[in-house]
Length: 466
Image (cartoon, rainbow, N blue to C red; front, side, top):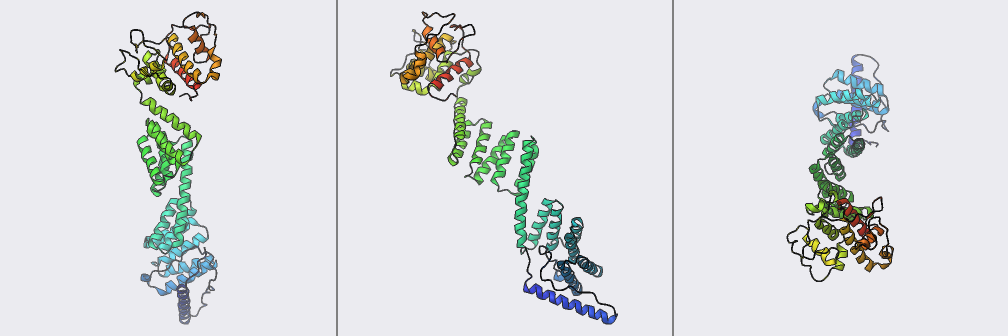
């Protein structure tokens, strides 16, 4: 970044040369002594990145200004000792001439004595806090000392004081980007190590410096989700989506936060928007799982309690069949409804009607369903075998493996009324036997056992188990 002095600056420097020579000649006439050596005109500056500390007009002292200019030429010639002597001589003669203090700061920068440089620039700024060359030089010194944030602040102040310093604007942009990258890397390392509060602090600091960065909002939202601060996480994820609606990762993060809140339908919608931007099988599977969770969360408490229930009622079993095998039941549904006198107002009423019309479960001869009655293994086997019969009608080749089953049970002879259903249920893998080869017709069915049987039926029907 070589700075070529404009014609006005060149002319000013020539005037400074003339003034200094005149002053030297006058001094020589007054007291005969050898005049100081003057630098040759600088063609290629040694430190083109340094900003010339031009003296403000209000300082006056033209001879000091002339020697200050000569000191700068010594510096740009690479003659650092002569430059230092010139600037020091100016300050000795005119102590309030703070541009020379900035000049000494640049000499120290050239020597790579960054602490000394910062001290000189601070002294210049003590005299004029908006002196752009000193602000710029101070920024260089602080950056070399590893104080990136303070350096950035100094550079920004220099540009605010002198908008013509366009080269510094690019430097500021690079520093901001590098600083943000360093901060993000540090935050990610902290998060990986489990130091979530530290990661959160770094991201918040980065956002204060770059408030329109969508990926910072997204990563902060992910940290806050892990911390458990879901309201703030949602707010920041929504901001990321607002700033960058074409980025699928923003919607994925939003979906994860909704899922953590238990808002499964919203989570599925968010991931659906991500999939629209960037389709993928893994994302589709997650969307399906979320929609199933949403459906499950909307179910009555009696249904949601099935998995951990020690026993299952007929209403619960009907609901399992009705929810998980709904497509099969709809295809097999009878035209006429089944008359039952005890299901009106029951939480599982619609599913009881569905399984009854499909012939999976029957009401009793007295037209009651007895939704609260406990399900026995014989009942589950009968319902499972009837569901398998419906599948066999649609997939006869697949059904051949279990249709003619002849399983041997220690407690259930082939002539028993429940034997065919039990044999088919075991042969198909929907139900199992005890370790002693018993079927145990009268044993109550647990919730986990009923759910496992229905999942196997889902699998056999060609539907992915939920």
